[in-house]
Image (cartoon, rainbow, N blue to C red; front, side, top):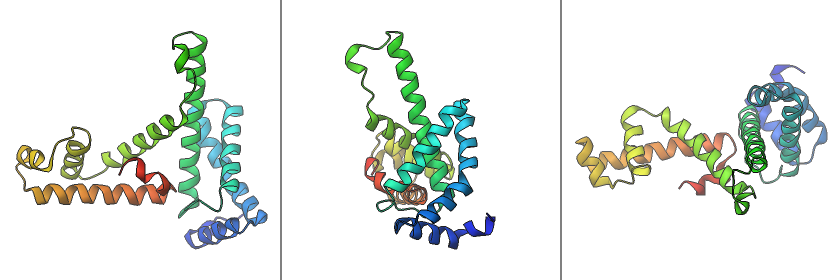
Length: 192
């Protein structure tokens, strides 16, 4: 399978075909990406069986949810989905270890999947924020993490409130674009 089949324009064709239930297109995407995705998952799990299970789970989910997903770039979406699924699997394994070791109280033994999803997305957003220009990043962190008002941020950084607002707007725009790019537009409400 040539790489040229999976350029940006072809990405759109593959996504459209999968949305329409084209099993051959789905098989082509699977063939093209599964080894790369296995490598990503294995890098984090160090367990081939677990990595294979995770990649399988991601492809099953892609097929089952093909009509509701907003995917712009297949490679970014699939890589992020595998990292997300790997994170969840490792969290489950870790929690089972803790339960087995009787570290957690009985009422905390059910894994709260929404909390894990939120934590993953928070970590993903934090990664995006880290790459923002320094002033923009600082303003955003003071607003979101330190819960400071625009006026307090303006005073602390010796800038106008308009500049504070502009930096926060810029940060939110970059975060939204990045989340949409990897197919997480449905989760934007968790942050904004």
